[in-house]
Image (cartoon, rainbow, N blue to C red; front, side):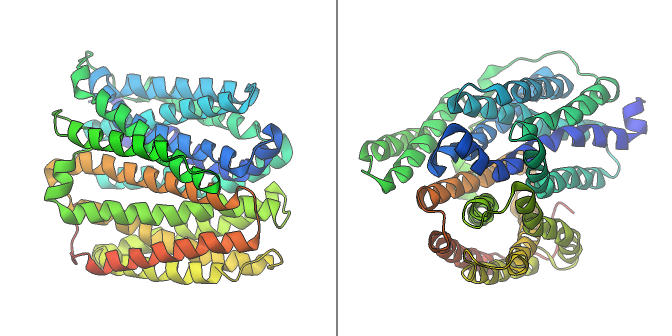
Length: 450
């Protein structure tokens, strides 16, 4: 028996130190957007590509890296992912222009997307007892790093400017890399089979998403109808392409046969659209409209992220007793209340009131996040758990990408209370859709994953 199996907590901590890098880097950037706008002389629409491209690279990278972990071995891919993040974090602060910064951020996303699927594979292979506990500890690494990302980013930028949010990665990379060499289980022989990767589907997916983004962003000026035409054509080609491979990038057949699971994905897209519109929008509003420093902005943003982390364990216990639906109903109602209260925030709003409103939205996210995860496993058949988890993450990324478009449309030229309220009204409409989707969700008292 290997040392890894006798001391599984070492395996979990090693993997956790790596997997926290994706949520940490995706959330720290929220406080850096204003500084980067000034650094590269950009509009908000332009700087928002740092958000959408990071999540697009994550959406594409994670399923590919999961399959490459099966082929090359999870330990090799885990170490390779850390090296990629290291290179991206070294090069990003020295970007000669904004285009190169986007490239390095996408490289960072691809590297960090390698760590989660390879880590999950090693846990599945090496831990048989208390696996659920191991996975919950892993989720704490991710959720905590995402929650404190804006605060960490705010303090780093305050003392070391925006390059500091890339340098903070190195302690985690070094600790995880050294531990991984000695602790992670050895890989077997390489089993290369590139036919498992749906390259055509992935290319069509990227074209479709990028063209949709360009079309939506063109609403501010002359509408680029050609981007809509390309998006429609590539989306249709993508749909028909996904019927062909044995392992499609997105399994539309499974979506049709399991309608409840499809609605889970739709609901998760809506939840992330609202959450990340606020998560990425409020820091820029606080800095540009209310003139808070990066450090103060980071402290205020602790409310929305911190309360989500606090609520999650209580929501988990409630779900154990009653299933996913009751906590999701509370999550839907609190997000409606939070977005309504967000309409009261303006340029002169006091800090305590903003902290309170954002705390309510954080509470809703705590209920919604864990509620949606357990709903996923309640409606996914055992044989489709792996693909369902991948699509669940893709839903998160799509919601986040849409939030960046929403912010780019209304915060591009006007960073004020009136345009914050327009974004809030759209989020309120989406929150009502979340409530309706929750009401139609069949009640299940016991989730199959538990």
